Structure formats: C-alpha cells, structure tokens
Image 1: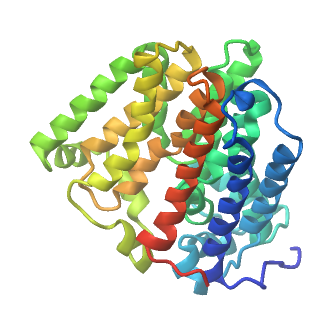
Image 2: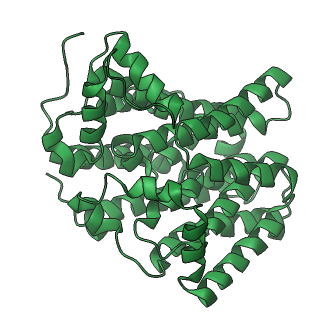
Image 3: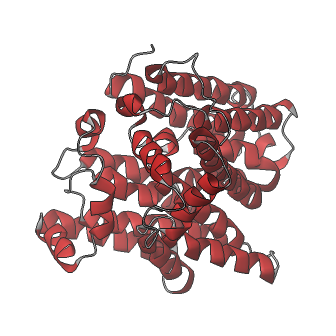
Length: 392
C-alpha cells in the first residue's frame, strides 16, 4: 500500500467555496472575451489558444483537487458520502470482499484499486479522472474544437460539485453514459465507435442501477419518440398528471418497486444534516421544476420555433425531457433532487449544443456569453446566497 497523500492546506469547509469561486472566475474569461462581439466568432472560428489551454489545465487541477480531498470520516458534513466510500474501501480485503452482486462495475473498480495497492485518495483520483475525463470525452466528441466551452458549461453546473464529492457512483455513471451517448449519436462515427458507445451506455446500469431508467429513455429517444415536440407533449402530460393526482402516482410507483433505485439514493444520506436541510422537503417542488424547464424551452425554441433539425440533438434532448418527465411523476418524494439528476446531468449539454452548433442569432457571441454568465451566476447564487454557505 502506498503512503497516503491528501490536501491539507484547505480545511474541508473551504473546499466547496474554493471550487465555486474558481469556476466562476474561469467562466468570466470567455464571457469578457466574447461579450463585446456582435458576430458569430465562437460558432465559426477557432478560439484564442489560451482559452482551451486554461480550461484543460483547470480540468487537470480539478481532478487532483477532487481526488486528494481529505478522506476521513470527520469530514462527513462537508464531503457527505466520502466517509461512506472511505469506510467501504478500508474494509475490502482478499478474504472479506464487499458484496459486488449489484453495481458490479463500480465495486469491482473499487476492489481492483485496493488489490493493486492504491490508497483511498489514489482510488478517489481514479474515480475523479473517470468522472471528469469521460465528461471531457463527450464534449470533444460532440463539439470538436468548441469542446472547451462545452466543458465549462458542464463543470459550472449546479449539480457538478455534489456528484464529484458526494454521489460519486452516480456521477461516474452519468459521465459514462454521456460519453456513450456522444459516440452513439454520431452518424459519422465508425461502427466500432458506435458499438463502444452502446456498451458504455449499457454498462452504466452496473455502475449505478438507477441508470436503467436513463437507458430506457435513451432507447425511447433513439427508436420511438422521434422529435422533441413529441417528448415535450409527454413532459407536459406528466406535469398535468402529477398536479391532478397528487401523491397517488408516487405511491403507485413505490408499490410496483420501480422506486427501489431512489430508495438506494436515500440510504446513507438520512443522517447528514446538510442534505436534510437542502433537499428533504416534500410536496410539489416548483423550484426544481422551474430549474428543469430552461433546457426544454430552449429545445422547443430551436427545434420547433426555429426548425433546426439535428438527429443527434433530438436524441440528447429527448433523453433529457423523458427522464425529467418521469421525475415529475414522483416530484413530491423526499430527496427528489437525486432522481432529478438522472435528467439534470444532461442539462449543460442541452444548453450548449444549440449555442455551439446552430446558427441561431446574428450576435450569437454576445448571447452565448450572457447565457454562460447567467448559468454560472445561478450556481454561485445557489451556493452562497440560497443555501447561505460562507466563503471561509
């Protein structure tokens, strides 16, 4: 076993503030670079070399920052599930392996890292590399030379930090599905590449079992629900149904056993005060619904109002809309944010794709800058104002 190394110059309570401040400052660079422009430079021309370079450098630093966080159980209030994964990792041995019958991809990765002699932070570094690296792979595949600004949308998302530090198993699964989708929807890709995408998508069900729902949405989006307009009708129908039936649908879904994955989300979180304060509210979550709506509106605007046709975007957008529609049916459950993340992980892709691929506005540079600024400002607002976290 190698000697342990972890970041000690930052107290656990400073970690989130450091991340949110740094990503806000990084996003301000492209905002100030493109805000004065009334053209489509970002859409049509290569970016100045320093912007992609700084983004890639930040991604590398971010992986190290996430991987070498303080691993001990005393950091539970700040790193949430980190202490649970630390305990699980420490309990693994050749003679007493943890149960790997479910979610075997994730737990075999944990077992492999322990078996080859990695310590807990080196294991976290591997998981962080997969979380950020697979996300980066998806951006490169979907956006080519504009991958760097797509990655900025991803890592400045409201949910990014939580699934880097807390729900790492779900974060790894969604990044894997994102990269698999990027390979699968690319019609120009070779057959082997598309098959690799399909394999990655299917494997996510064995990283976190809740991904079975997202895989079902991918299949519906790829082969049955052909246009975003149809998916939006389904989303609106689920919204009306949820408003009319109250808790009935949620209770029925629980009775059929389809909510087992959500129960697994909640286990291990019930005693963490921060999670209780932020997400345990029940009732119809209008705040989450409002947050979920912009990608759906943007999809409607670009594909219905402006009639942009792009098969890859149809599949990506329909997957988001269908997964979000299912969440609306159980919106009144406690900790429902964890189920909402099964659509939210695609949120930045659905916003970034039209901005970086479609000729929407003559002054697209300016509008893209404003949207990115609003996007990261929302994340900053939620962290420091809505949830009232301090900068220390």
